[in-house]
Length: 139
Image 1 (spheres, rainbow, N blue to C red):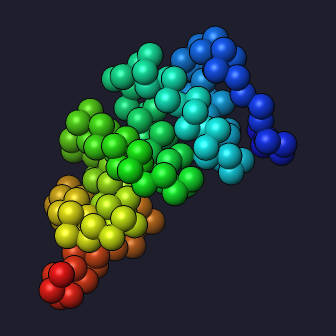
Image 2 (cartoon, one colour):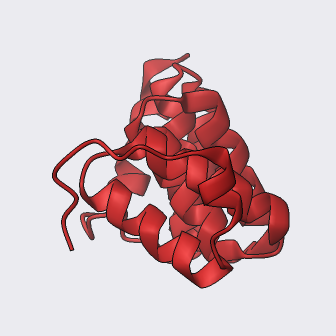
């Protein structure tokens, strides 16, 4: 389902959603390019379900897409706490740190992701390339 008009969400409406419905709706909002609205729904969901790794991942993606980099970083850090062996989570955290010009910190996460066998979010092996760029730049 694609959402074509900007959704009007109330806090009461969001709070009334069941966890599954909130997750699916937030996913649809993100897919329809409404990352801020998706993040609003997901903030309620992770408050109610703090151990829901999928919700933290989606929240991080929504914040990243909205260029809310500090909240994206926090969501990806929480995801790593829940799933420490997720190469994708380490790559996503590394990218959010990179976009904040914190390349050394990002390189650490890309190294971890590469060590976990990540080929990068797009399958290109870019985690290793990002590490090499930081190592050769002398930052």
